[in-house]
Image 1: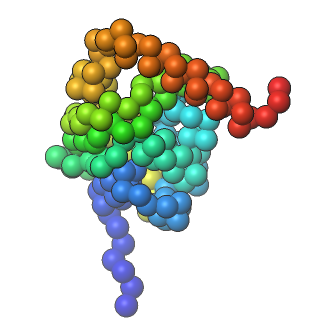
Image 2: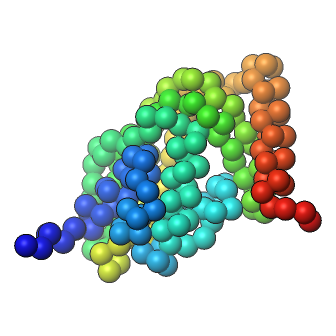
Length: 180
Protein backbone atom coordinates (compact mmCIF):
# COMPACT_ATOMS: atom_id res chain seq x y z
CA UNK A 1 0.00 0.00 0.00
CA UNK A 2 1.40 3.41 -0.95
CA UNK A 3 1.10 6.46 1.24
CA UNK A 4 -1.11 9.27 -0.03
CA UNK A 5 0.74 12.14 -1.70
CA UNK A 6 1.04 15.26 0.46
CA UNK A 7 -0.74 18.39 -0.73
CA UNK A 8 1.09 21.72 -1.05
CA UNK A 9 -0.71 22.80 2.14
CA UNK A 10 0.50 19.67 4.00
CA UNK A 11 4.08 20.21 2.81
CA UNK A 12 4.16 23.88 3.86
CA UNK A 13 2.71 23.15 7.29
CA UNK A 14 5.10 20.26 7.89
CA UNK A 15 8.10 22.36 6.78
CA UNK A 16 7.28 25.19 9.18
CA UNK A 17 6.60 22.84 12.10
CA UNK A 18 9.71 20.71 11.60
CA UNK A 19 11.90 23.77 12.22
CA UNK A 20 11.24 23.35 15.93
CA UNK A 21 10.45 19.68 16.33
CA UNK A 22 13.91 18.18 16.48
CA UNK A 23 13.69 16.51 13.09
CA UNK A 24 17.00 15.52 11.59
CA UNK A 25 18.43 16.20 8.16
CA UNK A 26 16.62 13.20 6.60
CA UNK A 27 13.23 14.80 7.31
CA UNK A 28 14.39 18.01 5.64
CA UNK A 29 15.70 16.07 2.63
CA UNK A 30 12.28 14.46 2.21
CA UNK A 31 10.38 17.78 2.14
CA UNK A 32 12.84 20.48 1.00
CA UNK A 33 13.70 20.70 -2.70
CA UNK A 34 17.47 20.54 -3.49
CA UNK A 35 17.22 24.03 -5.05
CA UNK A 36 15.07 25.50 -2.26
CA UNK A 37 15.85 29.03 -1.12
CA UNK A 38 15.01 30.63 2.21
CA UNK A 39 14.60 34.35 1.59
CA UNK A 40 14.89 34.94 5.36
CA UNK A 41 18.48 33.71 5.70
CA UNK A 42 20.15 37.15 5.49
CA UNK A 43 20.69 37.42 9.27
CA UNK A 44 21.35 33.73 9.78
CA UNK A 45 24.63 31.81 10.18
CA UNK A 46 26.72 30.91 7.12
CA UNK A 47 25.46 27.30 6.92
CA UNK A 48 21.87 28.55 6.58
CA UNK A 49 22.59 30.78 3.58
CA UNK A 50 22.78 28.17 0.87
CA UNK A 51 20.11 26.27 -0.98
CA UNK A 52 18.40 23.00 -0.24
CA UNK A 53 17.72 20.81 2.78
CA UNK A 54 21.08 21.37 4.52
CA UNK A 55 20.58 25.15 4.61
CA UNK A 56 17.03 24.81 5.97
CA UNK A 57 18.23 22.29 8.54
CA UNK A 58 20.98 24.74 9.57
CA UNK A 59 18.29 27.41 10.11
CA UNK A 60 16.39 25.00 12.33
CA UNK A 61 19.51 24.18 14.36
CA UNK A 62 20.24 27.91 14.77
CA UNK A 63 16.73 28.55 16.11
CA UNK A 64 16.73 25.45 18.33
CA UNK A 65 20.06 26.51 19.89
CA UNK A 66 18.41 29.70 21.17
CA UNK A 67 14.87 28.55 21.90
CA UNK A 68 13.53 25.51 23.71
CA UNK A 69 9.95 24.27 23.36
CA UNK A 70 9.95 25.93 19.93
CA UNK A 71 6.68 25.42 18.07
CA UNK A 72 4.41 26.93 15.47
CA UNK A 73 0.64 26.82 15.70
CA UNK A 74 -1.03 27.10 12.31
CA UNK A 75 -3.84 29.64 12.62
CA UNK A 76 -4.81 29.83 8.91
CA UNK A 77 -3.62 28.29 5.65
CA UNK A 78 -4.45 29.62 2.19
CA UNK A 79 -3.45 27.86 -1.02
CA UNK A 80 -3.31 29.44 -4.47
CA UNK A 81 -1.72 27.15 -7.04
CA UNK A 82 1.83 26.35 -5.91
CA UNK A 83 1.81 29.07 -3.22
CA UNK A 84 0.79 28.42 0.38
CA UNK A 85 0.41 31.24 2.90
CA UNK A 86 0.40 30.28 6.58
CA UNK A 87 -0.64 32.63 9.36
CA UNK A 88 1.08 31.15 12.42
CA UNK A 89 1.89 31.76 16.05
CA UNK A 90 5.49 30.98 17.03
CA UNK A 91 6.19 30.37 20.70
CA UNK A 92 9.19 29.22 22.71
CA UNK A 93 11.40 29.85 25.73
CA UNK A 94 14.65 31.79 25.24
CA UNK A 95 17.22 29.41 26.76
CA UNK A 96 20.30 29.95 24.56
CA UNK A 97 22.11 32.88 22.99
CA UNK A 98 20.42 34.11 19.81
CA UNK A 99 23.07 35.36 17.37
CA UNK A 100 22.40 37.49 14.29
CA UNK A 101 24.80 37.93 11.37
CA UNK A 102 25.64 40.63 8.82
CA UNK A 103 25.84 40.24 5.03
CA UNK A 104 29.37 38.82 5.40
CA UNK A 105 28.15 36.20 7.92
CA UNK A 106 29.95 37.96 10.78
CA UNK A 107 28.10 37.94 14.13
CA UNK A 108 26.62 41.39 14.70
CA UNK A 109 24.19 40.83 17.53
CA UNK A 110 23.90 38.33 20.34
CA UNK A 111 21.05 38.09 22.80
CA UNK A 112 21.93 35.98 25.86
CA UNK A 113 19.25 33.69 27.25
CA UNK A 114 16.61 35.40 29.37
CA UNK A 115 14.60 32.31 30.29
CA UNK A 116 11.46 34.18 29.23
CA UNK A 117 8.75 32.82 26.98
CA UNK A 118 7.27 34.56 23.96
CA UNK A 119 4.44 34.11 21.52
CA UNK A 120 4.30 36.10 18.26
CA UNK A 121 2.42 35.96 14.99
CA UNK A 122 4.16 35.29 11.71
CA UNK A 123 3.11 34.84 8.11
CA UNK A 124 5.05 32.26 6.09
CA UNK A 125 4.89 32.23 2.31
CA UNK A 126 5.86 28.88 0.82
CA UNK A 127 6.15 27.85 -2.81
CA UNK A 128 6.00 24.13 -3.56
CA UNK A 129 7.39 22.35 -6.64
CA UNK A 130 7.73 18.65 -7.40
CA UNK A 131 6.17 17.75 -4.05
CA UNK A 132 8.73 19.74 -2.01
CA UNK A 133 9.14 23.23 -0.64
CA UNK A 134 11.25 25.27 -3.05
CA UNK A 135 10.93 28.83 -1.71
CA UNK A 136 10.19 30.42 1.68
CA UNK A 137 9.87 33.95 2.98
CA UNK A 138 8.15 35.36 6.05
CA UNK A 139 6.80 38.40 7.84
CA UNK A 140 7.53 38.23 11.58
CA UNK A 141 6.74 40.31 14.63
CA UNK A 142 10.38 40.70 15.67
CA UNK A 143 9.66 43.79 17.78
CA UNK A 144 6.92 41.98 19.72
CA UNK A 145 9.31 39.11 20.35
CA UNK A 146 12.10 41.48 21.45
CA UNK A 147 9.80 43.26 23.90
CA UNK A 148 8.48 40.00 25.37
CA UNK A 149 12.04 38.70 25.84
CA UNK A 150 13.30 41.91 27.44
CA UNK A 151 15.67 42.73 24.60
CA UNK A 152 13.89 46.06 24.08
CA UNK A 153 14.34 48.30 25.94
CA UNK A 154 17.48 46.66 27.30
CA UNK A 155 18.69 47.25 30.81
CA UNK A 156 22.33 48.38 31.21
CA UNK A 157 23.15 44.93 32.60
CA UNK A 158 21.61 43.22 29.55
CA UNK A 159 23.53 45.53 27.16
CA UNK A 160 26.75 44.38 28.84
CA UNK A 161 25.69 40.74 28.52
CA UNK A 162 24.90 41.30 24.81
CA UNK A 163 28.32 42.84 24.14
CA UNK A 164 30.07 39.93 25.83
CA UNK A 165 27.92 37.46 23.88
CA UNK A 166 28.82 39.12 20.56
CA UNK A 167 32.49 38.93 21.47
CA UNK A 168 32.14 35.21 22.28
CA UNK A 169 30.22 34.58 19.05
CA UNK A 170 32.90 36.30 16.97
CA UNK A 171 35.66 34.32 18.66
CA UNK A 172 33.71 31.11 18.11
CA UNK A 173 33.28 31.89 14.43
CA UNK A 174 36.99 32.69 14.04
CA UNK A 175 37.92 29.46 15.81
CA UNK A 176 35.77 27.41 13.42
CA UNK A 177 36.94 29.14 10.26
CA UNK A 178 40.64 28.53 10.90
CA UNK A 179 43.53 30.91 10.32
CA UNK A 180 43.06 33.84 7.94
